[in-house]
Amino acid sequence: MSSDEKKSELAGLPAWLYPAGFWLAVVLLAVGVVFPDYAVIGVACVALVPVLAAVWVAFGAWKLDRRLSLAALAALAGLGLVVVVKQFI
Image 1 (cartoon, rainbow, N blue to C red):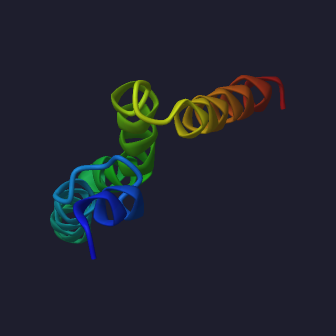
Image 2: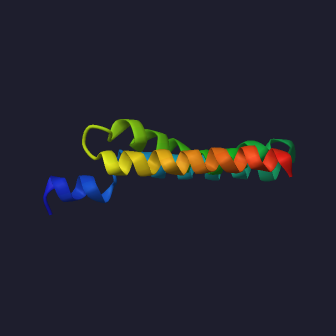
């Protein structure tokens, strides 16, 4: 497998991003079990890992793959739309 195939398989993300986000979320969720007042921090971390990945891809892969970057921006715009519409419900 060439380095180009590995790069496209990760979709422009660094290899450490999801494992680091996962373990950080696991630790924060475990802290939330012991201290329930802090559980919201663990849940927010779980939600922010994909958002961070989309931002990374949108801006980091712009020169390499514009379609992928536009897809990430569309996903972020959709998420923003959900947050705005949720305020009206």
